[in-house]
Image 1 (cartoon, one colour):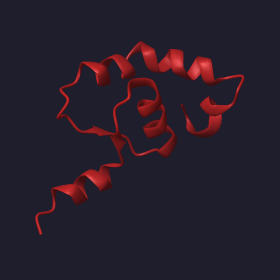
Image 2 (cartoon, helix red, strand yellow):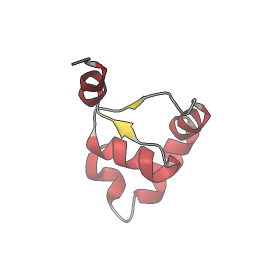
Image 3 (cartoon, helix red, strand yellow):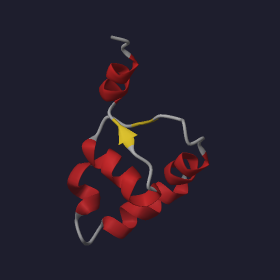
Length: 68
């Protein structure tokens, strides 16, 4: 998605087609329990929009691993 680039009305379809080349199929093929990590907020939103899977920032995932 490259930040706001893929959210522009004129480029949204392009960003989704690019995601469908590799990223989205890989996310869909992953196990339900697999963590989907992406550092960029727009990347996380695009993953969720396209696949229905929640994508976390790597720090969110690390924090969830802390036993306290």
